[in-house]
Length: 387
Image 1 (tube, helix red, strand yellow):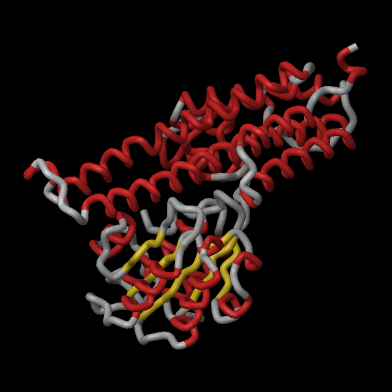
Image 2 (spheres, one colour):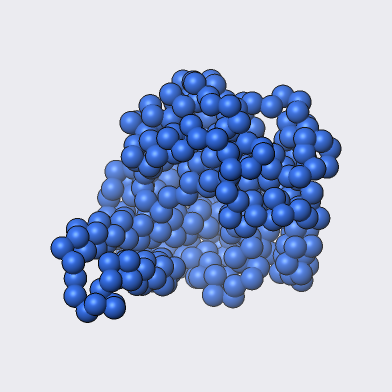
């Protein structure tokens, strides 16, 4: 099993990266783009493993079996740094630290690799700091940036990077991956692949976690139930509450672990007293945790909105007789009800309302509850459907 096996439905990308690892078309800076869930960071990590592999450069680079490959994939390789953020942005101080480290020589005999998973979250100052490092690359240093589109990265940065464009994998590719990698039954794998709309991480969660499937079933049931103002308010409150609970569940354990580590680092546990430097450090930690919790909640809401949008997409497909399977085939009855009591034009307007709510929350910091209430009212079934 090689490091390339988890790149689902990306044959052309895999061939290009294999060639670069073999010394053909190698660059000091790379930009991986593709829709959410297409595997941008997975491709970057696989490429980094191939660059560090004991069999490289050569056609066997990225064997997935050697110590170098294993440590890169596990995130513990000394010369491969993965930059992930739980915050809303990546600041200039963090990037300056990366730039300083990039000027050092690798610990091993190959290159050092810096992977920035959310390059679209770099602040303007951070971009400027990174640009200098990419303009004046140090020997044996490789930068890999990941972003949804090329437009999410400054033109001055993307013009100095080799572009790798990933596509949304097909439902068949995702289902086959779930069966092969996780031993998921074919029927469940097919459902997860369809419901995820090609998002590999989401498909994995749907296939392996029943509570995730139950939450999604609740969200996709909303469109057929939005027949009154009260139902709209209830649906908005439920969506806000469920996503908040899910986000808190994911962050609470990490928050507690970070607090415990901080207490241990300052000797609070052993000495039973707090040194002067502890309070500022605790305040900084709590600020970061609040920012992370906010982003995680927005991520959960965003995922729910994508599920909600898929129902109206299906209703348009049913009304127009479009070929292909529905994303929500398991609730075809509800989808047909929405299609029958509306028009494709109205459902396009509903999709626009969902996208507007998404923009309000993610770009303009509108409170989640307020944005969801306004959106649900816009999605309300027309009077003729209620009469």
